[in-house]
Image 1 (cartoon, rainbow, N blue to C red):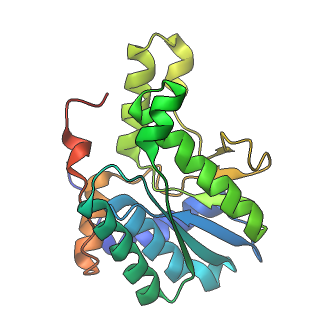
Image 2: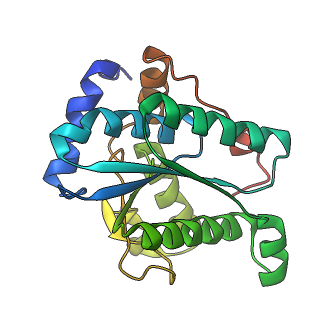
Length: 211
């Protein structure tokens, strides 16, 4: 399948944001950045669209303390990216494995709860109402398939919405925006390559140990 050139991505994402009213003018947007291609692509694109969208950005990175030196390197990379883009950033570390054990959760569920809890607390402290995340069209397909595997029926076919309320109690009015939901992972990787962003790769994403 042939994808559009990375240069066209800016216009497509801008149109998607405007059509779905994902980001509001004159507001600060929190952007979750793991260091992987999708979130790095999102941060770079939004940094270039700040003036046009009339928004301000604040990057957020959570070290889940699951991958030792690799996780520390991820945090250093994202901090360097923020400096390169001239953006403020908050980096936080939390022991997800301990959280998982205390609450008897799967690792994926524990990581998601800790991550969004961090986003919620930070957004509230900054007076921010929206957090942008790098979910792509590939994530959308994976989400729908997982819903069907888990037996959610027709409801699972809906997948993720471009804009939805955040699953956190720390900030009940926080919204999650997904500007890349119609962009493929192949495109985010091509965009990062074209812009010399050199994102990090989390090998656990390819492990069959995680659903």
